[in-house]
Image (spheres, one colour):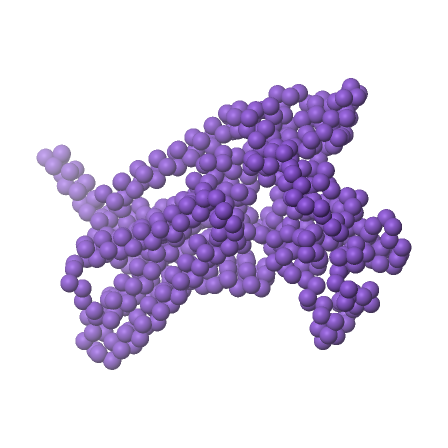
Length: 553
């Protein structure tokens, strides 16, 4: 009953998403014309102008302001436009079409050739950990670029900067010079200002003077042709021999939407230079996990004898994790449909949180079982209580996120579902609505299992209990193995986020994305399941044999 109903619901939801994604690829509205109200709004400060144009303190200097931008105040110590370059920074997750805007040159009137050389001709590979961010949020390629631009505190002399950038010098000397104060990793990541890496800003064919002038000096609003090539505005597209009907403010889906790396659940910025490898690892692990979860659900659905209270808990854990991982895997395919991207982000948030709650239930149920505490209610009522917890807690958390997402003046607590990926964009909201609850869930699991281990050891001193509870002990160690695997994978995430260690990120991706595989091994590859399969197979053979005899008679 459970299996058939749930399979119907899941297939209906996935079919709806698939229909919308196919429609997105075929429907012209997914690539709206540049003259449409959608694109006009996208080119203004009041619309969703992400990576189309800008409405920040630098747009006047860079000449890439959206329509309707109004200057708030006079900016001080802003480097000239000629000092900026657009870099593809290895340790920052920016789509292939976009890089980060970085000050990489000294002012033209700067006279110190030594510092100019160190700024402009130093190491060309820009790494986010070695950049400097001014109080105004501008990223500088290195300390010398900040020095010649006059934004460093006066206590840092040129000699001090030479000490701070010399890898061969003693760390204690660098501490004396307060070198570490020059680098603020969080400020660096938060201050990233995107810029197009390959955008066409001039005409390549002979055209009228007005069209050429509108291309070079006209408003800024990125448009794309059907091959994904980027142009500064519609006029640059037209004077590059692209018809207006082939131009859109949205990029073709075939050139975008790579699967997400699993690390974005914890860390919005992919801090690894091996983004493609991590993506392949994520997809491979998720496919294995999803197949394993389907096998688990089918097995439990086909054999009612497995659907006792622990079996039902396992079933719904597998179900919620399957939906969470499956939606996460296909979420990048919904990017071009804003409302669907937001909906998928909310559902991924809900089902991952629900999976954590079912793990809580496993931990609690084992704790109560081995502590020998009896409930007045039976298993049926107990399962109802478990359902209330596992569905209401995620619903409350996600409802808060949705309310904040569509409320005005929520600031950094606005999750911004679907802003960059189909997931939570704001780091503060992610901490409040996902990472924080996750830490509490895992803390409860550790406490519950610690108490259960205590009662297991106590029970070993009671021979009668040890004999009678042999089956429960086996069940406990199966669940213990699963709980440790799930708990430790998220520990890898916390450690990787804190240390920015690639090995820990890979461990998090592989072990956490393979959770469904571990569930299948722990709950399906057991003697109880094998006996059920063998019994069913034997009964079928017996029935077929009787049918054959009856027909022969």
